[in-house]
Length: 184
Image 1 (tube, one colour):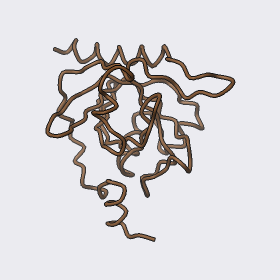
Image 2 (image 1 turned 60 degrees about the vertical axis):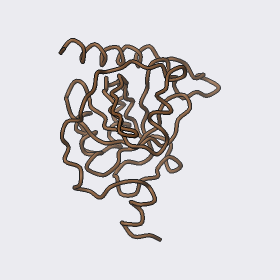
Image 3 (image 1 turned 30 degrees about the vertical axis):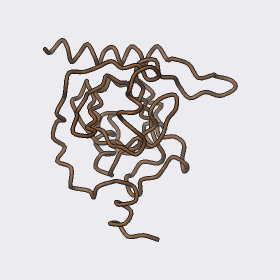
């Protein structure tokens, strides 16, 4: 049993109401290969990024939980989950799964590490899964984690459906990249 301050220290979260929700400091958007590039090192496990949905312009914070084939992440706070739900047009995160809202969302993922900020083209699969094992942030109103894909990252796999590079994710990643550079 731990209080809120201890939990925030343990899980590297911040208390609700401390994120302003301001647009991230977008840097030139990069397309980086998940396996051959440096994205896995730059956005390490346990580190926080600002995720911006390209279509709505809404941003929220997410912490990378794990991920070998792609980034498995969690919204940082209940407020971040609320923004993610708004992106999907629902009021509860579980509605994303219940309503089969599996569509890929083009994203910009902005990460700051050691004073360097970079923005990556990505794709979000927002369906909550891997509960309870992947549910490490208390009180964020999100059961489990969701997936963020990068260039050539792969889906979860099983015996019936092996892990593979998903063309819809790759198209969303390209869309995110193009959307940024068309604005320039």
